[in-house]
Structures are given as structure tokens and as C-alpha cells.
Image (cartoon, rainbow, N blue to C red; front, side, top):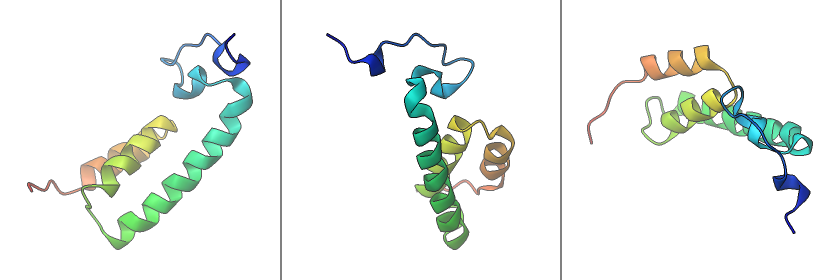
Length: 81
């Protein structure tokens, strides 16, 4: 028998977290916010880092912060390694 956590039907096109059980959404959004803040701090210390910036942009998009994600992506210098 499946856990109740996985018995939801959702449309992730409207919001990424729609695929999560409603009881889990707030906690996951909070944790995501903490990771975003940590990545912001690292990105200020190491601007343009090829590991940090893409993850920050991805998590901002996941959180629905399209404008900030686009601004960060556009301001990041492209590095060829």
C-alpha cells in the first residue's frame, strides 16, 4: 500500500511544489529558502562560481522568483573551463 504522501495528483506546470503532498510544502519551501540564502551569500563571496550560480538560479526558479533568477543569470560571466 502506498503512503498517503504519494497519493496526490497535481499539476507541476502551475507550481513546482504542486507535486508535493500539501502537508510537506511549507517545510520544503522553508528549507529551499534557507539554501537560497546560503547560496546568495556564497555567490557574493565567489562571484560567477560555476557551481554556485547555476544552483542558485535553479532554486530561485523552483521558488517562483523568475525575475531574480533571470537577473543573476544575465549578470553571471560565462566561463569556459
